[in-house]
Length: 281
Ligand SMILES: C[S@@+](CC[C@H](N)C(=O)[O-])C[C@H]1O[C@@H](n2cnc3c(N)ncnc32)[C@H](O)[C@@H]1O
Image (cartoon, rainbow, N blue to C red; front, side, top):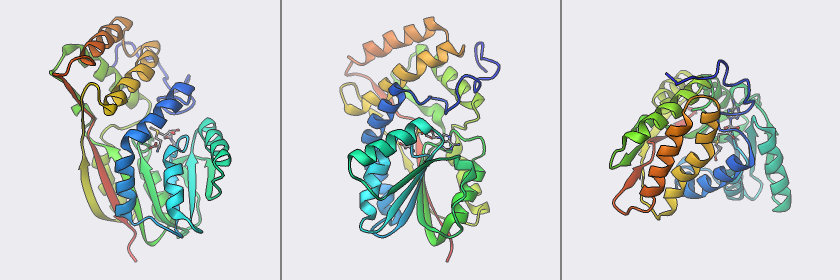
């Protein structure tokens, strides 16, 4: 599957596949800004609002948490968990700096949520279950914590392989292959959204909406920075880990630089699906 993959890729990466360094933290901030229209939309569709207690599953450094928590005021609160201590420390420091008092953030495994049963009004998850080896445990933990009538809103990848640089270039192929190999070796699943309806139904939830999310980014547009920043941050890491040859990375990045100046191309972002599921009353 990979070129010369390391025997145990997790050994040198205690946190998730993209790490929790400064570069990834900055990238997550940009990523949230670029996709905040979609997060706002799903929060609205889920009915998240004042007075509710909402769980942000795998909150990262909290860029979305800072947008969601004001929607729950007054009296509502956001519970945020992430496995990265670095991200939770950042979130707590930043919340204090912004004088935000309705977020409770803690380090925890999304696959072992131990909130009291029927204690939350809703939960939101984006780009986390695609990295967890046991997404079923995430869904079960959320389902148990939801009050009857509570909604679990998720935005996850499906058919990630469909990400495309147009016109096609063979130089992208080893890069796509290496990204996927690294991700899967790390216990993730780039098709996770396709499995969520079953996992949700098995956990006693009923699906209320499934909606595709697809975008095209053109050079010069803000969304072009999304793949750019991803390649800049992630490709050197997978070269270091043996998934991609440095020559392949360099050739692709040269091509990407050329494409970034070419108004005749576009980039199809990896497809996602928004899925909303409700706990029956
Ligand atoms: C791509 S980031 C998404 C962050 C945030 N949900 C967002 O949409 O901006 C993935 C996050 O999942 C977290 N994560 C991965 N596996 C986890 C697990 N088992 N439990 C808790 N957090 C996890 C990572 O630490 C990282 O912050």
